Amino acid sequence: MSEPQYRYNPKTLRYERVRFSIWRAGSTLVAYGSFGFLFFVGLNLLQNTLVETQLEKSLSKENKALTEYKTVLASQLTASRTLLDELKTEEVQLTEKLFEVPAERASRQVNHENHLFATGDAQFDEQALKIGEHIAVLNERVKASNIFFGERLRLKRTEVPVLVNLPSIAPVADIVAENLVSGYGVRINPFHKGNYHHDGIDIALSKGTPALAAGNGKVSYLSNSNLEAGFGNYIEIDHGNGLITRYAHLEKISVTWGQKIKQGQVIGLSGTSGGSVAPHLHYEVIKNGKSVDPLAYLVEGITPALHQQLTTKSKVQNQSLD
Image (tube, rainbow, N blue to C red; front, top):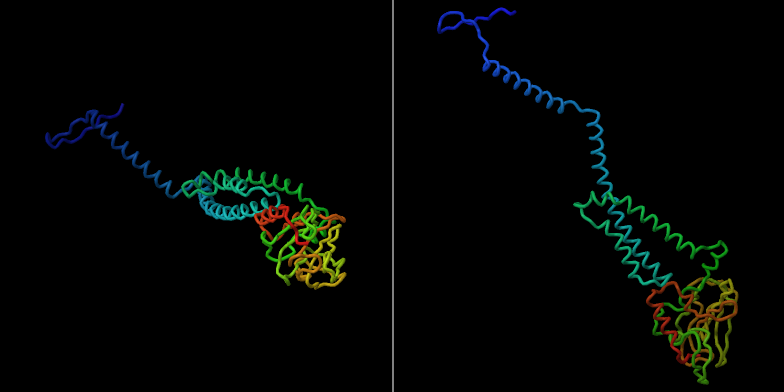
């Protein structure tokens, strides 16, 4: 048992025994508790300020990496928008030219896909989460497109020279639909007025207009004739693979027999030689000895709209010029 404690009381001028007091014990407990709480809070704040745990270090590095990656991702999204716009334009042009599909359909499809890349910064995080899925969809669509085009445009090595020499351009520069006065097929003969098969197309031109080779090849035949009948002065160019082009009613021939010809080269000047009722160029494409519609080979250097106009004009069964 502990010894009793005494405390000097200056009022009574004597030592009095210290008695237990609930109020004094409570206040002492509160004082010590407050000091302990404040000490704990200060120590915790000091630790959080000066000491960094392994988890905090890892999270800090991750936040820094995410901040840097967001900048990189924003740059990639900007580049993706530009690339998608370019691909959209090329896709529409290719679709129109090769498959004669209206451009509006392809354009609507591409615009629908591009909406993921058209948002502002407020939706950046949400859209960034969709990028992986969207890229996967684009990859699948690219694979499908590659298969689609590959099945139709697959080439053998031996077919490359055929395509290079294909007579694919117009035989005159800056051709317009108004100049195509008679097309391929049954027409009215300008001399006996009866129906006959017109084996080419007649392009009305001023005398002396340059006639151009529609493709690479070699001059396989040429004729200079003063007769006012037949093709008059004309040239035939052999493009290989059974393809021959014929340019008739020329005023002047500018090449020689056996000469190698480049696509777009001037081979002569238009005129009215032979059986011709007006200055023009009669142009034919012959495949394995049989004439075919020249417009079927005219695929380079003109727009789809112009090709459609030429096709419509050539179907009119009018009178030819030769």
